[in-house]
Image 1 (spheres, rainbow, N blue to C red):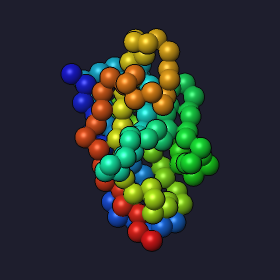
Image 2: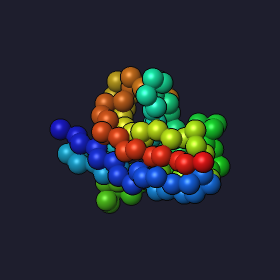
Image 3: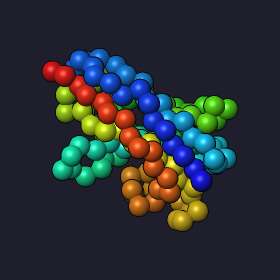
Length: 125
């Protein structure tokens, strides 16, 4: 059973930075495509960033956020800079084993096989 555990969420002022981490266990981490999503109550879960062989980002975070991974540590990171108050949300990491379907569609929530419990990021104005 794959487990994903996020950490690093906290209260930060607008314009500040945070680095989120997601530690994976119970899997061959390197074969998974990994992504970050975020969600506010009453809103749909929103794609933020993904990493497989290359990275992809939502337009709203491009050039401010950086996703990376350390396969030796089974961990994926999300470096967030210049944070905005409307980016307050629970941030989730997700893993996709690329079996069904065998293509990577980073923004398709239903394609992901495993999710973490989320970590709260609060950006104050």
